[in-house]
Length: 321
Ligand code: NDP
Image (cartoon, rainbow, N blue to C red; front, side, top):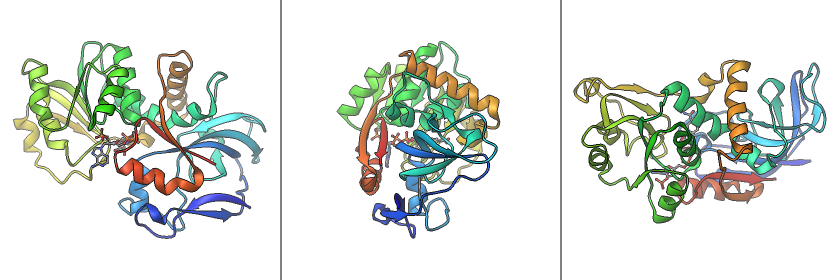
């Protein structure tokens, strides 16, 4: 028997139980991967709580890195012993997981297992946000919420490497320090951030806001934009944004709003290779520092969720089987 985290119904972190399960068997085109580390992502808290619908029993997890232990029929690109990672797995909170070979990313030499597990989902997210949801150009000014979070620390570094000016928000002194270290030019608290952003930009506002906080920040994020600025709402850590009047975009300065999700930015092998190669290369050559803020034994997945939802984590959160 092997182990996995299993939720039998939606609810708080306590529904995440450490259970004995049959080892999975790879079907055609699949890899059986021994998980070295599984990435925890905020979406799994929405799935666990019932905010996003899933089927039960539910094993969370889309992200992991590990070693291929068996391959299904027709797999050509990977062999037993290959080191892979994925941002598009399922049931990765487990000792073993199945990964579609088409969605497996080869881990380059020089990238360790923890970094390989920490990077794919939040790294690819940072990549598509700044390249495809809104193309950030050198000289743009960007507002990014939760600057010390998983996406926040990676996106800040990539934006600075692009030559953008980066303003972040955070909730504590420790997080402010980390956001600065990642390269943020100005680090703000959430209280009154729209006015401060105006001051910092000589009244003009920012070109783009990347907002993964949602309900608590949405309105002030719109207020922080310059004329014809773009709001990229990519998450709801504080809760979902209520319906709003599109007229608000007119009065705010002919603003644009988009609400992207990663799957739509990994539509084919070419996109997957482009984004994953760039972020893994950035990690391997030192452009991108990947901060694993906390690692928990797999059996303590519930505590990892409590800490993530309680705003106690920074950078990446991992589960180690
Ligand atoms: P983070 O590590 O950024 O954790 C969330 C952070 O949000 C917290 O640390 C906290 O930082 C901030 N926050 C603000 N208000 C709250 C609140 N009320 N409760 C909890 N946290 C709050 O998580 P991720 O990097 O994994 O994800 C960031 C966001 O990006 C999430 O909304 C997630 O769903 C989204 N996401 C979206 C993707 C997409 O494709 N659309 C893909 C990946 C992530 P602080 O204390 O500094 O405020």
